[in-house]
Length: 162
Image (cartoon, rainbow, N blue to C red):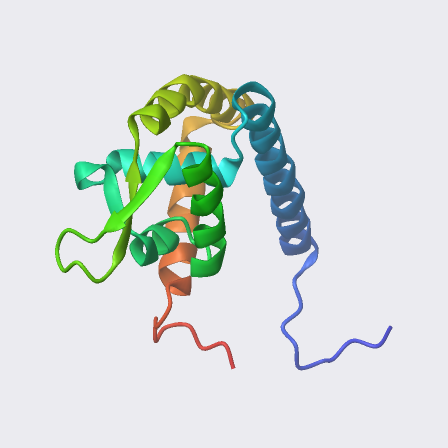
């Protein structure tokens, strides 16, 4: 394979770190998702929606804001919320502030399911990530991904993706 000499290729350590990130995050997210599905019949995406709604004022959020908060497309969140609504975990209601938009609202059943699933999820995050690494390293991961997320937020002029 001939490499383009103008491309700033990753060096050996950067490539190792990048691949470790890819494999590690894929395995971690798959395992966390599997535990939630097996023990609580919830996907990771459904769990995150329940968490966001539980933290929102009045346990409700506009669908567009909810989609942004979990970094999913609006259509993906709409489909997920539809499944969750059928299961009685959430309801949809007219927006309280203007009546035109639609909000997802956490139901009592959804709150109960979240309360039951949260210890499983937190134990998994601890067991498979937090407790495996030094506290300083874990804080560094947080700083790195705060920087990445800030740079990737839509409309950020600092990101030139041309």
